[in-house]
Amino acid sequence: MANTYGDWLRQQRETAGLTQQELADIAVMTRSHIAHIEAGRRIPSKEDARRLDKALNTGDVLSSFLPEQDVTIADYFEAVRELEQQAVMIREFALAYFPGILQTKRYARAVLGAAFPPVSDEECDRRLVTRLERAKILEDPATPVVWAVLDETVLRRPVADGDIMAEAIMHIVALAETGRIRAHVLPFGAGHHPLMQNMLTLMWFEDQPPVAYSEGDRMGRLHDSPSTVRELQTRFDLALSDALPLKESLALLRSTAKDYEHRD
Image 1 (cartoon, rainbow, N blue to C red):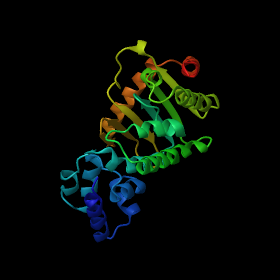
Image 2: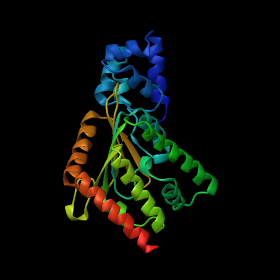
Image 3: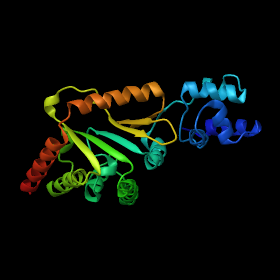
Image 4: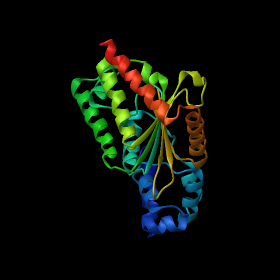
């Protein structure tokens, strides 16, 4: 979001002579949540905005002028990327591509190189570096806990050469076999499911409310309304309940990787 809202909140807090922690205590929020709003990385829920108005004696200004949450992916994903680094648990639903934090270098380059409108080689390289930096969160052996539900389409549609697809699939198998992630395939046979139109990322934190990020064609949206996040969590849970168990999912991933290897 544009930082005008966050700047105005900060100005009102400082005018009131309050630290972020003091405002958080009065508004029954966390200090980090206040910091994210002031920095333009989060939009408060209507309930949070009302509490901030009450704490700062600003009438209904903060609750009446909440910024719109629909923005382009480029504008919003920087905030999402920062939150991703702070999360203690991440759950991913992938509809068309493997989740960014699970992509190999060659797979990521193939996906980024197929962007439309086309991007320059320099821009592609810049985006690749960012994507590989995101994957470094998996270098910690325990945090964040990562669960991934992969629509079978992700496996079957060859968005890169066969050897690249096989490598990308076996990378996920390796992460799952070591226990670093859990990966479940949602098979075609499951039919219609509640996440058929968008990819979804759910994130939980130690000291702030959970958020969700959904992404469609040229549009990304960060959700922090508690009711919306709960609804999206439920949709993920329903999709997960229809997915194959871990053992069967890994068997399907391995066999699909072998199919790609044999194509070459």
